[in-house]
Image (cartoon, rainbow, N blue to C red):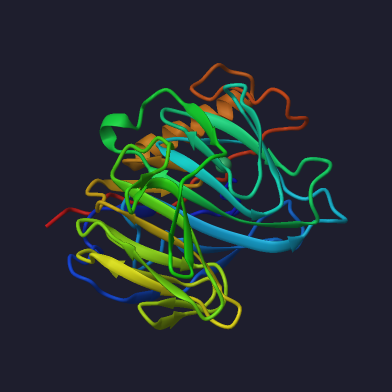
Length: 328
Ligand code: MN
């Protein structure tokens, strides 16, 4: 999806200043962000957060729905660009049709992963197919690429077979990275973990964690318990580094959550709209190339053939110019 905020701010992310080297418990409340163009649809955004810019290389986390799209055309996000990141499209309900400037044309359903590596630059559109199911619910996550690989050629992957780990009443689909010896086939550029976890009614299970990673849990339902403590629906709890395991439990209706983790991302990032870069001038250049490509020029952003309609215009640049923090 696109970041459809009308006036997005530049946001600093990455860097180590918010990283806790030892286990902690920091609850991050989501903010509601309207998705323009899709009626009555809001997303709940937990990353980047004022108190936590990244978890490992995870730099953006939206969850949305369930939305009733039975009587509407559903999702319609016109062609828009990305740089310096991977997009993870993960559905809990419904179906989304992905088309990109490489010619990829792929529907994704719950349990399947659409992973798009923007690298130096890509454009894509996401829509509900004409015959879409009546409910849409999912998460949209971005992974920042490290400096050495953020200019790789863009590529797209679809994975419909992902490993599952079980313990007690818990079942975890390994979307990205490795968990309990099971490895996702998805391409990752930094040590990373993303898992979709379901827990049965009043049940629990334990998962081993990589102690060098920082971890967080995004609660997708009511009833989520992390090490016995409740986490409100749509909130994220940051767990810090240095944990060898976590116990995840479910309430009266079970629980659904995303477990995110990764090696702390040392590089400082500058995020604006759909771009991840390193400084303001680079963001300005990405924006002007996107605008030129909409005018028909050949730039790093090719067009999305097969999408019927105009591409998204970039918002105005912010007037406040951010510089990366100086590391102490
Ligand atoms: Mn997108």
